[in-house]
Image (cartoon, rainbow, N blue to C red):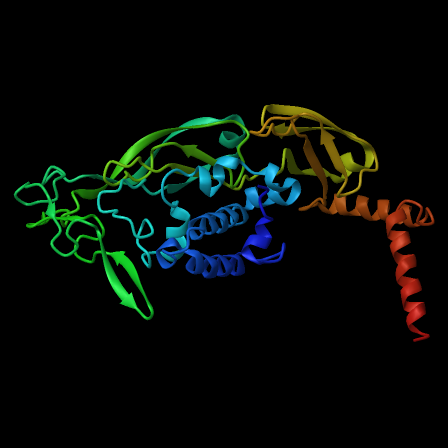
Length: 376
């Protein structure tokens, strides 16, 4: 049986915003949740269809692929039917504890994956372009040394919670239907500690830090992320740990700025060299190179040095270094130098303005603008 269009399943338009998408999902998930439709054998399949549609459309990458290629553009394993037993955490993240962690099932001893962590890593431009290896210190949960991870002051094993009888959830009546929520006594674990450890409060874990070596590939840029599997928060009840995402932040450079694979640099050129032409040494990330300056160079002229930019971490051709000429006006002149410049300036005036074409065209534009204003 062919799948229905995901936008049709959720009853939203193709340009729906995130907030409206979640609102539509909540409404349909509440309506078709199996706990509220025990007598309807199709409720679970409808709920899974709604969940699958939301899971794809709520992910920017999957949504873009779906918009372009339809169902063939998204990974079939991302659907609800391939998620394994029960309903995935996507429902829990939207509804919290209204139905409990597993749609009403006994979840006291369920294994939970640990949370993902994020670390902002500052790098110099050189480190980002060439790659490096750095050690970072990140916060994490460690086994409590006082109680040796038992959570109990006497190190006794946790007992079955008397409030929920080990289920991890309690049922409450809200309006016309009953809902479940995590047990307030054991916080959904199904077990409780009679004499909690004073150091960890009965959790068996304390906050600490760990040092991790991160290999940064060459070519990374601002916003790129490096995923370190299983370096996040530890899981619960034997669940796998989360991941650590290292987000790259490249510090501002005093010479270069980066745009994609290209580097940009301001190159000051003295007045005489810009007028008569010459050569000047400019820095690159690989050392100095000689840049030839043609005569009559104007401020703002761009010089492109092929292959002196950056190779992206994703591969492809190396970018270029683009140098922007900035003509520098001489300062701290002596009287003799000033007299020479005045004489030089007078000689330019005698040339009927042909030595300053940009100034002449600008003055012509100003004159035309002012003349036009007289008739308005």
